[in-house]
Length: 107
View 1 (cartoon, rainbow, N blue to C red):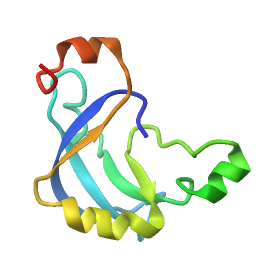
View 2: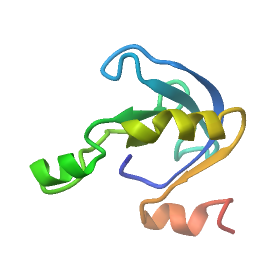
View 3: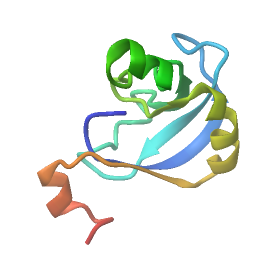
View 4: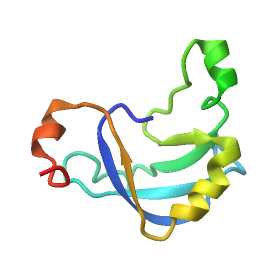
């Protein structure tokens, strides 16, 4: 999970080549200026990841970490992405004080 508070609107679903090749992913568009409004340009995608699993916790002592993209369990990725694509909101929380006091979505 990204290491800051994020609130995204989902823009579209597509397969995304690269480290998570062949896994279903969903490109995200950030809604809050100065917080996540560069998500689209940075190619932030929700994607399945093998490091989001009980096995990863046993091996690493914690979940694996995605440096910006919301990562979800591989086995649930298709169902989650198919359910929320097309304009749903995604909320990923990290207790960042500046965001907590300034977010238009919280106040």
